[in-house]
Length: 472
Ligand code: NAD
Image (cartoon, rainbow, N blue to C red; front, side, top):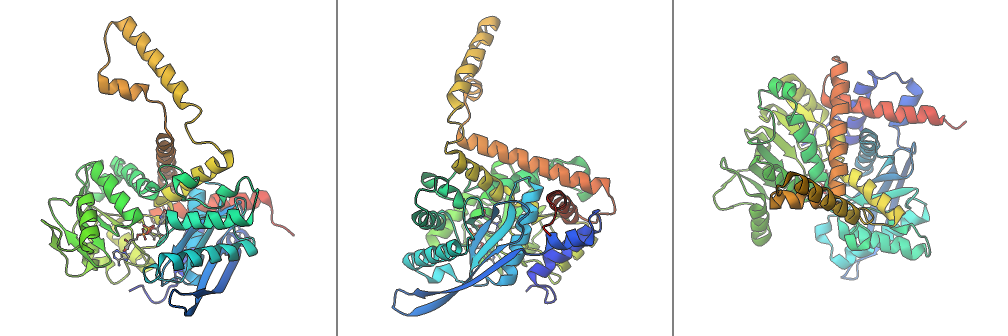
């Protein structure tokens, strides 16, 4: 249960205020950064498959117009409410600033449990929602660009694009009205796994910092780290997979219906397929079931990655969490009370608004691709391969030796779209990690990494507002 005395937006504001003290901005600018610029609340009817009419509640919030377009996912969940969408939109503004993605923050939400609707009903809801956004100019490649979030994916993004394009005939940049699309509909390779990969790159960078690891009593590097992941959806599955591939041990996995653990390590794909086949993560061969799925959060491990929903760790269960590092893959998984507990315990909380920025970073790459109308790598791949072949040939001729076959393949390979996207994401996450850590190190009064991340974000958005000026 979340702590009762904070709304989600209230929690974001609390973290903001904690960080604002470490910045030079005057009160008025700080207020302008903090507020949501535009909140669109809508209701529309849905005719269900059984003929009944139901009223659907939905939102789109544009938190900040300091850069255009606004950017942020659309969530389908029964818990969606205005406060939650406002909080998530605000986090998007700060997230984009930290990873130098030139967008303002936005977020959308539809208050439905998607599991209770047929694909046809979901399509009608998504298309009507898009039409409502169009009517109020809340969507477009230059104004506001949604993306997937909890409960939505490529399918919904394709419906949004189709609705938008149908209502904007001839708009050459229409594909840039939404990101997270299927590759066949203007999506970019690497977007699907981007958030999980960004979580991995960010945490790997932190694990590679000897001073931080020493303070936590851990060895440097990802290899051998014991990891627990909550949520095996888009973000959780890919985070777990990239950690496993890098030599970490996934010792616990939690889903909606239950949680499992094994000291020997769990194979992420095997667990995923077991769940698909049996409908449950429980009773995975060779693993043990936890009594309650929340118990996984309290398991002894090095890194805990909550990748499901917000407020899962609060003042009540935080004292029992044993992980040394918490990587916030989900948005807002910790309440401010939990933050206070971890601050006192010396647990390192790697904050959501930077750690899960991989999705929006690659969404930015997708949007650029849509505006440039050309696939990444198309122009340079063959050129690079020809050049590399030539250089290698010259080296072999001059040395009289032949390079090993696997090395030869690696050296000669010209960049594909996915190589460039991964490389752009890796660079972004590494640069952001160092910027936040340096801000923290340069001001020892900053209490934690979340506050340091907010300081970085507030300074960038503040500069933007100050340089733009405020309209009279
Ligand atoms: P998703 O719908 O693909 O997956 C969420 C998973 O969490 C589902 O498998 C669900 O069954 C599981 N879950 C729900 N309640 C649970 C519980 N109590 N215990 C354990 N598991 C539970 O959603 P997603 O896109 O992976 O998003 C997850 C989180 O990451 C959200 O907070 C979202 O805002 C955030 N996020 C997503 C993206 C993205 O690109 N998809 C980007 C940034 C942040």
